[in-house]
Length: 335
Image (tube, one colour):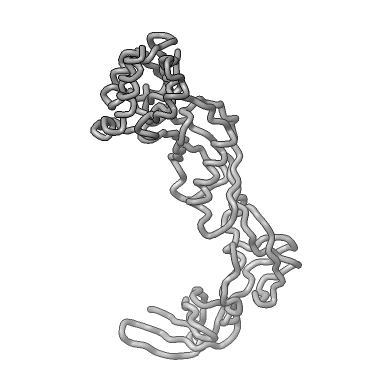
């Protein structure tokens, strides 16, 4: 017995040299210390317990998953992890052989436990809260870069699924190319590393909350924007398309294109450039015909703002034309 223990100690102390020559990675200590072995008793052999089974991750099956009772046992990979949903049976003999290849000889240890262990992947439940949070984070990253807060509700209850108990990547497919909408059906794909665990279609309700300008009092059509009293309120900009997120910086150039009730949000249809041509006034008109340009006076038959096409009339011939407003009391009539 003394001779066997001496041989075992020698082998255990030689793990560092042997493991350095082995291609098998060892994640913890490369050798079992003399002090650790001595705690087992100078005259008693080390008794190792081989597990009946183990739950492992995708990195593989390690010595510490299957063996107990060996002081300072290095964490040596002894087998690949089984596929998700499958299991494998590992014999004690194959594990001991894998450790011997790694430079660790446990042949003199007294074993207890079964001759083989059943190994499967460690799993956990993927619940509704985690899925909703991941969807929210992805939509926030893609569609709310300019500001605001995305809020997501699942239109259909999520059925809890079992996934590997490790880092997962949740990807969203079939995102709307035209932009986010209040109701969206997404394909939720769950991956671990390069392996796809599963994919599911999930309808969701989306809200995009932003601080937007709204009418503080009743506003009238044609009122200069600089005189319009507005306040910022938190609104869902997906509930009504075209909600104005912010007022233009050059507010002095704009006026209201529609009347608004108190609390009504401004939209992209609520503003227009200020009217610079007024109905009934005589305005300067530049008439272009190829390279020829003539300047004359015409009568505006409509109000107009820069860029708008309005009707004008030659006061002499009474003939009507359409002109594009260029600036204050100025239009361009292309022929």
